[in-house]
Length: 266
Ligand SMILES: NC(=O)c1ccc[n+]([C@@H]2O[C@H](COP(=O)([O-])OP(=O)(O)OC[C@H]3O[C@@H](n4cnc5c(N)ncnc54)[C@H](OP(=O)(O)O)[C@@H]3O)[C@@H](O)[C@H]2O)c1
Image 1 (cartoon, rainbow, N blue to C red):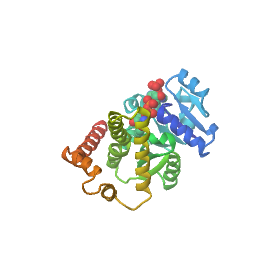
Image 2: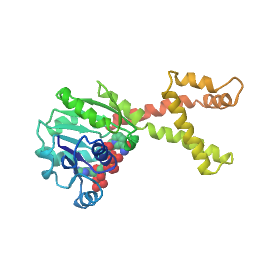
Image 3: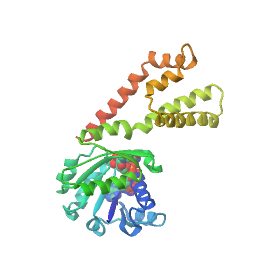
Image 4: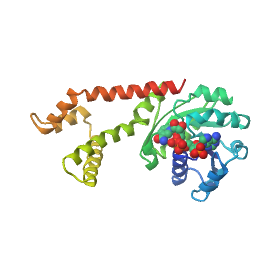
């Protein structure tokens, strides 16, 4: 299978490297289309694969085209490649907010998959929600899922609206986690720890807490109850979180992200 990744940025290169590392595709069969000759030339000196700057030399050859450009660049890209695409090709888009119907209608194609990965894909620890049009066959869907699995875990969703929901939860989610980590690091520094000590205490607390959660059947609420003994230190902290409605703030933040994802899709 020949794969073309359009956009040699963060996500495009993450995919290129993950696919090659997993040997799911050979360097000969992996193409990356960049916006400029300079970028394609630069990347070809540092990465395996074949790098292009002219769609005319690569789009027609691809069995699968992956759109990894910013949503605001999609209009110009679609205009460039529309005369080159073939209805037999499969298209996978990871662009936030760009709907399946927009891609199908603009390019005149039917086999379209839309996915929402997240940043830990860079280290194979991502999670990707994906959905597809009815024209994508079972085999094509499994092939694309295998590709997405090289960057972490995957979740197929029937309804396209759930891609926007995944954008608000797992797509933006790493930033929510870093926000909370940053506040804890600041608190640790205020208490007298050096920055490196504060970062170690906080990052290992997050890693350990998540690993413990993943290795048990307990819910978050049950784990909270285990840590917070009556009249203890954790309870004192949780009382402030409850009084300041932190739980509601997190939920409102995620809802705002969902509204924005839907707006971007208009
Ligand atoms: N980063 C994330 O965590 C994340 C998570 C989920 C989804 N996404 C989605 O992934 C997509 C890419 O994000 P990113 O973070 O990888 O962005 P990025 O680093 O800015 O990469 C986008 C790349 O696309 C290139 N490009 C733009 N127009 C092009 C064209 N017509 N032909 C070929 N290449 C073109 C850009 O080239 P120039 O730099 O030369 O303009 C740039 O290298 C976005 O749609 C985003 O919504 C990202």
